[in-house]
Image (cartoon, rainbow, N blue to C red; front, side, top):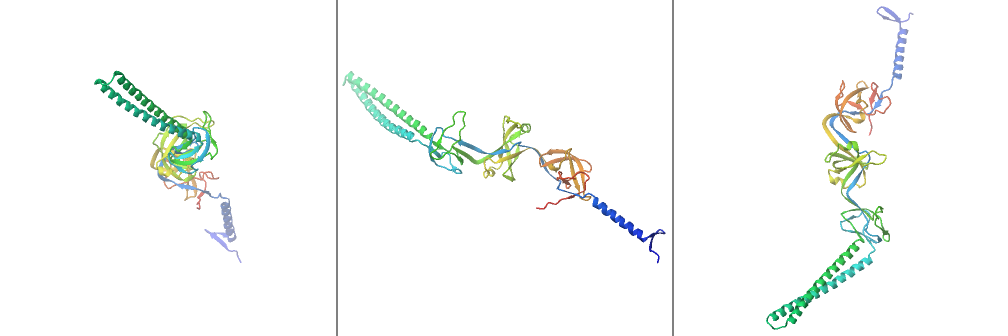
Length: 397
């Protein structure tokens, strides 16, 4: 029996040869597919239109400050005999926080008070006698005019009236001295009482009953007795590099973020730019900038001392094509994923405003990047470059 053959345009090929050629082609395709580089999985962000802001941020962590904070100490040294508050208590202005031993001062105040009572009584007695002597002098003068009394009697009555008036004035002066003594003793007593200068919350309370407190001598800092915070309002103070600070003005909008609440952002406004540069050893020179909360009620739930960052908005453009800043390569280049061809293509653009989140694209190379394009943000992955085969990685939540 003859072997079956295949014909092409009159030529005959053995069927076995055709089968071998097909198998060889399949093997070559398999080898090519097996050695072909696998597509790189990349993370992408879809380009869109929105606002882009030019901003500056602090170089080191800022601090959430209370509007008022007083580290209160007594003005004299002494032993604590009573503590009328605890850490975390809310107090009112004028409320007594603690007392020092003051029995001697209290006794002196009581003595001055009693002396004042006696001085007042003496003054009243002296002045009543002066009024009586004044009436007698007038009566003696009238009688003398009528010739019913002698010159000596009249002169004696007038002199007595003058003496009594002088005694009255002296007694009144003594009364004023005694009143002043009370004020002196009261001032000494007040020094033994530590009061709240404003409404607030007691952050720290250092002394206990029986301990001694001392005021700070000149040039020597000693711990305060009470740390009082007015938490009714707050602001952020943040160090800005001296180069960036030159463009900041009070009234500029800002965004406040806190390390403790990274999922929240607070709108703020620049209140103050310090008129001097802070020179910290081994660190960049900075200028302290204060930012207040636009909504003061938001700050009432925050803790004084939180570390905070501020982003101060210098300029803003709306409705512009914006690129995630994390996707921008050196030379104003971006990598775009062509999903139809599963390939990464490189594009260049001219940047406009920029911050850590977005960069404005003014113009772009041909073909241009446009809204809806998928730019690659996983630039650190191996094999991510222009011309590489790639597929989009879908993150699962």
